[in-house]
Image 1 (cartoon, rainbow, N blue to C red):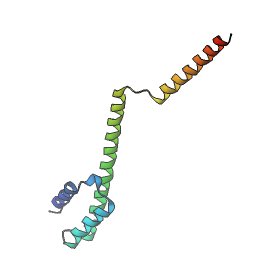
Image 2 (image 1 turned 45 degrees about the horizontal axis):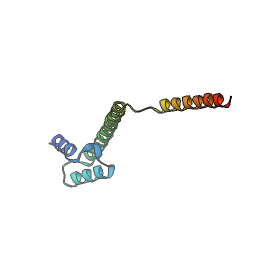
Image 3 (image 1 turned 90 degrees about the vertical axis):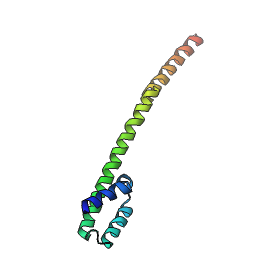
Image 4 (image 1 turned 30 degrees about the vertical axis):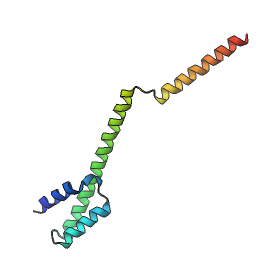
Length: 102
């Protein structure tokens, strides 16, 4: 029963986005209602925080990959490519100025 209750709470409150305060609030309610002991509540909180941090890390990695994919699809110039183009322009300006000054 307690495992079922934990799974319902995990699913119901969106474990990936819970704050520690919210987790402690849920734990307090469950302990007060006699659904779990204080030790079980601490274990529950620790487990939920681990799951929350893991889910956040996975979401961040997924978002980073999606953004990188989209940027690559846009075929935008990288910082290095822009710097190289600026260098080439400066070199051409030197050549043009040298030739026009002769």
